[in-house]
Image (cartoon, rainbow, N blue to C red; front, side):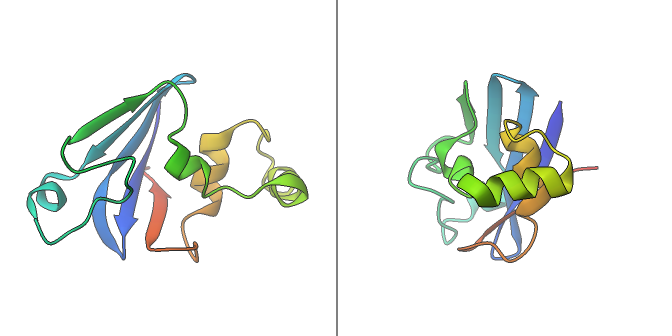
Length: 107
């Protein structure tokens, strides 16, 4: 099981967990969830539910990954299987992402 903290503009928004290769859970942090001023991190992950489950990496997070030759280069340089979407997300989305979301591994 691998876990990552998800941040919105540097504020902890929730936790993304890969429970198995085919099950992912995103759960909003209690303080973030209760703060009405803070937006949902994505339209597909609304704050109306604190926990979201999926049989594949949520499209919002999958779309943060590079594609094509960039992805192949990243997977080779980082020595991560190019089909390991969660592993690549953990390795590449800690800094300088497009948008307000960053994802950092929980150690």
